[in-house]
Length: 153
Image 1 (cartoon, helix red, strand yellow):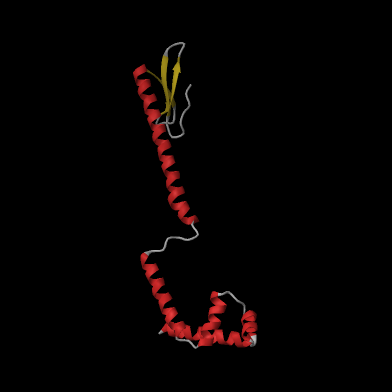
Image 2 (spheres, rainbow, N blue to C red; image 1 turned 180 degrees about the vertical axis):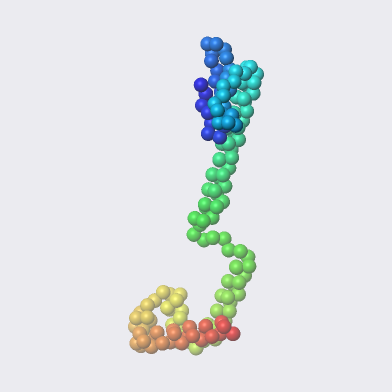
């Protein structure tokens, strides 16, 4: 007896001793039916089942491929693609930020640079500039407040 596929509603059997070909299926009343068929009909069913299996495998591979290379990988990416509009918007914001920072007093620019771009701590900046940590924090806070106000305008 040949294997019945999950999504096929029939199975094929060939009794080689009797040379009998049988198609077995469940009818609309949910009763199991066995029908003896000619070799040509059996071969047609067999060919159809192989084509059906082939299509089923292609479909599964396509779905797995699509999920793996499109949706799944897209979700896994660390740096998702940025649209052209978003890139332009980011460039405009960066340019505006640079203009605003360049308009700040020299001490504020210098301390912002060290804190945000050079990743130095308040203590390191205070030590380099021979002042207190509180003075550095105050300068940076004032600079950030000025930047925030100018961005809102």
